[in-house]
Length: 497
Image (cartoon, rainbow, N blue to C red; front, side):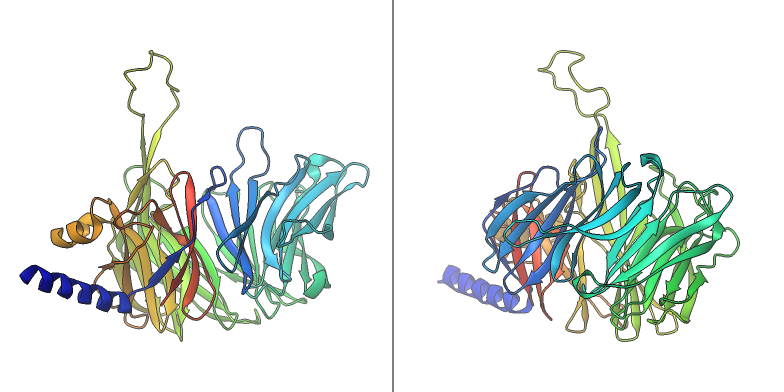
């Protein structure tokens, strides 16, 4: 009788917990495209969505390997297609624009004397559309072909093309900024000159908001060992500069950018005071910086620097917004490596002498909140214990978004962080479990970390893979497409609150 009562009580506990926790549903497992390090979910409609995987170029390759998959509304995979540009082309980007998934690539031909940028639609049945030209750069030879950057607005209605001709010694850097609207229609295209000398290496990070205002985060000191950045805005007429001012020895160490819901452009991150990275010893950081430009690009709302006591090994991950609060999120992240263990069954000299075993550590989640004037409101650190080996750290990051007025964090965590009884009853021998934490975005107060009790095929008892927490796409006010994987297979899933 006592056993029946305990079992009944345990069932009630599970039901009550499930009602308060995120709900996961998972599709059947699929074979992964080879070495998909970078994965993005794009172009959700009620009929389905795309999954784009990228394997970095290696050896004699010049473009990453791009694989596109399409899933229908039942989470069934419809096709898998390799859309890697030809060896003669430069890969530029792959984005969801104009209600289509578009592959952007550039091709130089000596006969035409130019490098041409095109957009190729990838249809939901796997067929490819006719390439549409979106820009060109004159060039006498292949090595002078220049380069293109392409980005799209958050709602996918506008595309920004940044055309960057080849370096010219003794001149200031020139760019051509082109804005496109519906059906690849060019709205305007203007050549502009930066107030900085041209260098062979350039760093420009373009972005465009839903209103059509262009922003470029530019590194302005490519010849020095510093990390000076400026934000440039352009409304089709005037190019304006807003410097990310760092006094004394302060230098940008890690930087991210994001659009607020109203279209304001925000750049933030961490700085240090010597610009040095100390491998294996911890890179010390000394504060945060945050700059926000209004949606029109005509005025800076704030630009602040906030010192803090030294933190180590933190990288900026994203910026989120809740009402008048800006939230900078980071992660204590580092990598260690060592020579692999020798296999005694293999003859001496048969092991690759350059081989390394890599361990990826994704630990504390760092949260800094700022008010409407950029003043620091709080600093919160959420502890998590996660590491992985030789997998590019695909499971060590975290999910973060504002849901029902709360900052929700979801991540894989070592099971040892939960009490022994729960570990045995709920998780069996699985080494990691899915956990979640809620944070008040106004005060920074965090709830206690909770394990997800009903994990299904991912994590938990009998799970065959781990959640890939930083790969997700919002599909509604409280719903998301998510992903989990191991070394050879993966599942797409749905998350709701």
